[in-house]
Length: 379
Image (cartoon, rainbow, N blue to C red; front, side, top):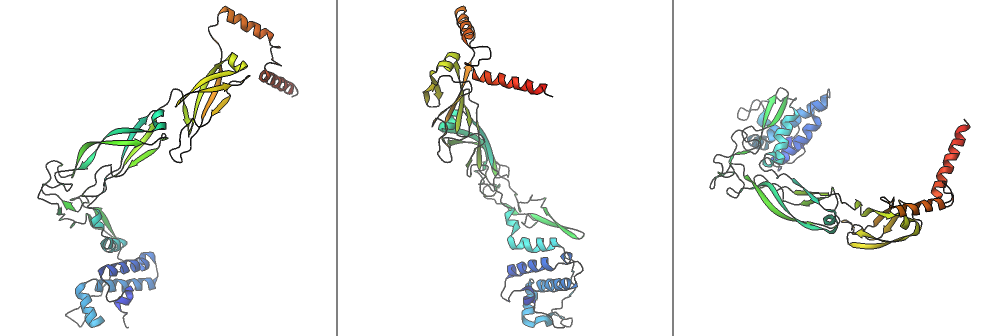
């Protein structure tokens, strides 16, 4: 039986380099692996062809012999280049990923550097600061690059050395029966290098604890749970990797007068009974000073008045909210005799206890109570 050309088996040409060979093998091996094709004889045969072609072409000496003599270079009679065609069709996925996939993408290089951690700093603002904006000075404790060793962890004049146990890959492969398990190297802890002469300042860590001072501009209109990100102001990276980011988490303190809901401000304004009945004008507070608010006659408690443009300017679209004032009619206390007499006279002048004429809300309430008991007697 005539064997297929090894280059055709892998779908490559005779000028392909090792990287192309490994990529082609991984793709085909994953497709035809017996574990994915249980009982499929064609897939098993195909997998053997693929593995045979890969093991010949990935070896420089065997590839050179194949390019010169073809399949005859590995026939049993050729003692110079004899090759035992005994392939294990049950090569596991760990072999394919560990030996090929890792080599293609260079996983060991990624182990040697590590981006610094992100940091979060909580800051409390008054409502006035959040609405108008402010510049805050922060003192941030973090890990910074050691200025003695410039982050490599070794004494000046020395450099980290490749780990002799994992050969600088940071990972080792341990075969456990059918599977190959990839584990972090216990000698270099995944960095791929070891430090023989550690820096006296950072003790080989490459980073030292420092407190840095930052000025952070808080934009107008920011609110609780908003975050400001400062790029590269987090912890320093390891072995020259980029620093993490700093997130400033905003919390706005409770205000004694105003309550904020999105871009609107709310406040309660107490008024006395006389102003509620006769109307008048009062001064109400805003974050920009006092403004006058006209109270119409016969204003009921809970009435909401809107003062436009006196709320919070949105940090996102620049829209400015409103100030909403809820009036509360306050019951007078500590009355003198004259005031009590006036209220008695007023009460007697009102038309009846149920207030048919002067208290329409009371009238509606007692009319509803009457209908309720009438309906109750019908059952």
